[in-house]
Length: 123
Image (cartoon, rainbow, N blue to C red; front, top):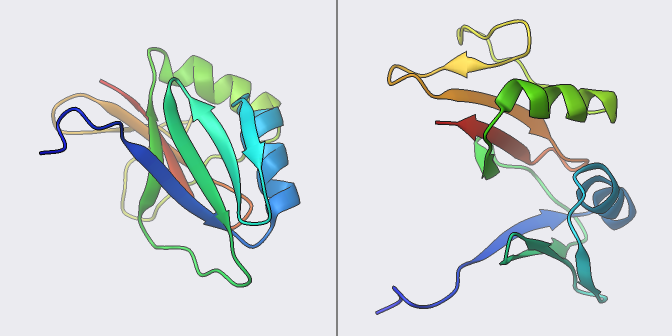
């Protein structure tokens, strides 16, 4: 039924100015719309609506993720832009913060200003 419908992604922010800076300036996503309700970004043709909310409690799991070709190179660029990679107790991560999955993929995490967990994955 929805196989041909375009996917939209959602996140929430109680800190829209900080979220705009992260998503647009640091991550480089084009801001296509801003209203009283949301910041809207284009992510390689997928709409990301970062909803403006009065209060927010982030989930304890990954909210959004990007598949990248060079995870360590991407991490290096993000760190240069002020991003701090997350580390999780009990998860063996290398010096860049990359965890290698049992099937060999590399995954690393960082947070947005509201504490949404964002990920990078290299398959």
